[in-house]
Length: 431
Image (spheres, rainbow, N blue to C red):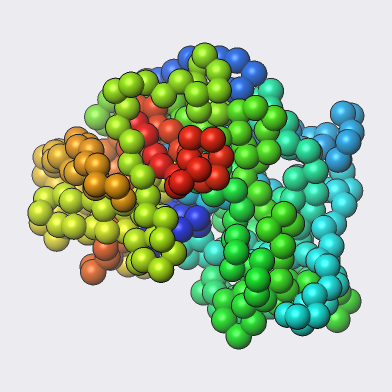
C-alpha cells in the first residue's frame, strides 16, 4: 500500500492500510462486478491497482470512486477526479491540491475569535490517520458524486507542492509522527472521500476551543505562519452526503462476493441515502449495530467484537482499512510477505482460519459474523488486487477489531449519519 499504518485508529479518522510487499505476478483471478443498483443516487466503486501515476506492486483492497469538483456556482469550471479513496471511517473530502489547481477554488477564511485568541486568517487543517496524516488549506467547492451535488462545501487540499504555501506546524508534525501523506504515491490515491457516520470531521471540540498546547486540528494562516484556531462547525470539513438535497442520511456500499484466493479487480456500487429511494431501502433482515454515543466512554463511536474468546471493545466497520485487523496470537504470522519494518504483521495460517464473531452494540443487540483469514503469502503469490480473507494484527495488546474492506465483500453495508433522519439518537451500521 501507499502508506503503512500499524495501529488501530478511532472515532472518525480510520484509514488503515498495510503493504503486501509486492505481488508476485502469479495467476490472476476473475474481474467480479456488482452492477446494481443504478440511479442518480449511485456511482461506481472500483478496487484495482490504483492511480496510474502511482502504480505500485502491493496495492490491495483499496476502494476508489470518481468525484467532480467545481468552482462554487459554476457548471463549466469543473474537474473530474478518478481514484479517490472511499473511506466510511472518516469525514470530509480531501484532494491533492494539484488535481484542482486550474479551478482557483476560494480559500475558506477563519473568523477572528477574541475568547479563544483565534486570529482571522486562511483556514488550514492537520488531519491524522492511524499513522501519518494530511496537511493543507481548506477551500470551498461544489462537489458532485454520481448525480448528487453539494454546494459550496468546505474541503481540504493536500498541499503536494515541493514548497507548500504554509509549512505544517510542529504540533501537526508531532501528531502525525512526522509522516505527511502529500502525494499520489504516498496516498496511493488522488484524495480521500470520507463518508462516515458524522456530519463534521471534528465537531464540538474544534467549535469551542483552539486545542492549543495539545493536538491541534485547525489553524489560521497568514504570511507570518499558522496558529491554532477555533473552527465553527459549519466551517469544518463536512460529510458531503449530509449536504445532498434528499439522499442525505447515510450510504450503502455494495460489493460482490469474490473467490477465496481473490479477484484481479472488483466493481461495486456506492448508494447515497438510506430509505430515501426505491433502490436504498434497508431490508427487514438487516442486522443493525448501534455505536456508543457517550463521548465520556472509551468505546465512543465503537462496538464490541468477541472473536475466538477475545473481547475487542474498540471495534468498527471501515472501508478505508484494507484488511481485517485484530490481535490473536494463535494465528501464524511467519509470512514472507510481512514488511520488514512494520510492527503490524499479516497472518499466514497453514489453512484458511474460519471463525464466527459476535458484534455487541450499544443497545444490547448482538450480530453474528462469519469470517475467514487466508494466508497472506498465498494471496500475495497471485497477481490479484482484491482479497476477502486478508487479515493482520495491529500489534499486541490492541483492543480493536477492525472490520476492513474484506468484511464488505458479498454484502451491502449501510453507514448512517448521526443527526440525520433514521439516526437522530445515534448512528449505526447495518449489513
